[in-house]
Length: 283
Ligand SMILES: NC(=O)c1ccc[n+]([C@@H]2O[C@H](COP(=O)([O-])OP(=O)(O)OC[C@H]3O[C@@H](n4cnc5c(N)ncnc54)[C@H](OP(=O)(O)O)[C@@H]3O)[C@@H](O)[C@H]2O)c1
Image (cartoon, rainbow, N blue to C red):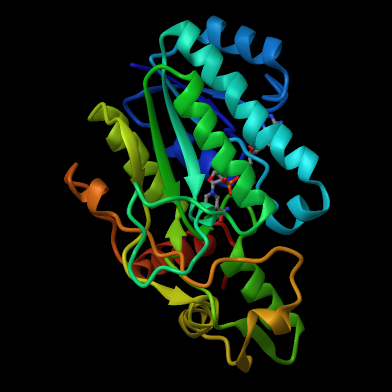
């Protein structure tokens, strides 16, 4: 089984590469192929001749996408279409990683994979267009939506909170957005297990449980032994360029049907903090 990993330098991509173990994985970066360039993508995929392609490359700057929608759509919609077309030509199954931000956040219960998408921001709209491209242009595919990723390969929310706690007298964190923080190592393992099981269709992969960003930050500080005061604020008070869903908890029932259940986000956070300690980023 040969897997071509597009986006191997990213936060999730780095963990996929580390966790692939017995599976043969060919890593590809934006230097090997800019996914916006159909010819580069076709060359990469036909040379690798993979059974599976994991597309972990994306334009992921949620606020940046509001300022530069053309770039977000060029990477997340057109780039995904290029990969989908080339995957079909090569007879490879495409595993597309998507996001909870395709949903608007008005639900009273966890979102099911088949619920209608209605993105609130440009990033979410560009990823929803990527999902459409996968369904329209690739042959065999999986679309896996994840949420609130944190991982040690790149600075993510917990690391930013810990840094801010060292430099600011008090932290103010949004308390009116609810979601499921997800450790990229756990996500990577689930993706590889789904590939081993030859999965298909749309499903959701998150750590279990949910919280607000404020509660997530409070738990990060508590577990790291920080005494920096923290207070809740509203999204309106945060003045971020991109609107975000108030509630984007994803149902993982379809994942559980494959016998895959991820630990709760608090235990995953412990494992992540241990990883930071091993890297010398945390005392
Ligand atoms: N971060 C989150 O909270 C979150 C939440 C839900 C879903 N997701 C989804 O999960 C996936 C992984 O996210 P992540 O946070 O791990 O991403 P990330 O750390 O921002 O990494 C993005 C990757 O995409 C590559 N890339 C960007 N533009 C490219 C282009 N034009 N051509 C080729 N490669 C390009 C980057 O390569 P270079 O470094 O070489 O540019 C990098 O390897 C994405 O599909 C994202 O939408 C993320």
